[in-house]
Image (cartoon, rainbow, N blue to C red; front, side, top):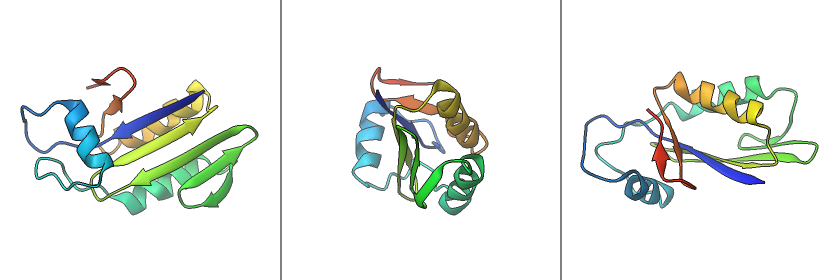
Length: 113
């Protein structure tokens, strides 16, 4: 099973839909209403949290049949999870919560506040 977990931090309220914001950020469009993230620190937190996984590089991890691929821009983090357990996906959400980035689930077009 594959899921993508996407995160960004808005710095002001807008009328833009989450799906529109997600699409723009996924296409590396810089948005003035989205804050820049501490990508290096986030990747360090991921490395620490998933230290028992095989780290292929700073954005790719494997453990057994499971894999995590990370896509980042200055404003956006997306974790593409393949056969990742709910527990491990919750760890990703916990990391991003520290940076005030709520989860956006593109499969159901919901951003969790």
